[in-house]
Figure 1 (spheres, rainbow, N blue to C red):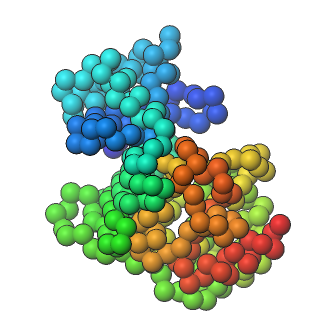
Figure 2: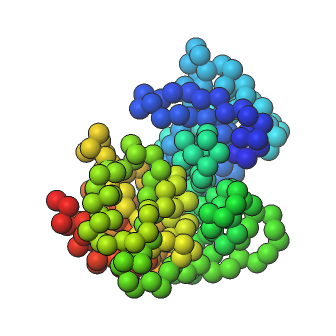
Length: 307
């Protein structure tokens, strides 16, 4: 993903929902899918992408570019095999499956901001492990500087851990912030207004008496900051333009287990546990409320007053 970005080859294709889709999305899903097929044959992959756009009359140039990048990792890649690997990720959730977002926060990726590669394993509706690659986070999962990038990993019951990209250091354990005063809490929110209800966010800030301005950034990198104690509250409120929106499992699963294993709490906006047994979306949940755990009840009380 970093190589594609550095070489300025972010050729966008527009989906029906008008969200930008890049060469890095397709190439990333192809590479991860191929590796999972090799190491875990028979386990389904539920990914965000399909090769349909690449196979269209206008997708030929993008497909050739995707194959070129995939070949740098999988030398035997062809147009046919790359499409096959991408489409391995179009499976449906079963009793055991991987879920992948190859570029979470595509708009942040395109502008050179925060984005994440998110992979997780779900068994019987429970997230067993999650990995977040956040190439533009600074040391200790901070927003300082422009890197060098951080990888976070969590295994259920074994904590959440992080290390810098390619720095040779051991993984260090993550812990959420110990802040127990609502007024001192730092709120993490989406940078793109279409992903949340900005008016309600402003109302929450005032009603909870939060002293600081919300910290805005794209993608599940917000979960990384929350798990590392760089914020205490995170809300995914439904945009008035998409009141019936259902969260996609690949947009949440990896970040959820990382935050929970770091000591945080994540529910929907009404306090219900997130239900990963409903297919490709969290159909029985509405929005996201995440916190350092200590402030979760206060967050839910503030949310209840919005309705």
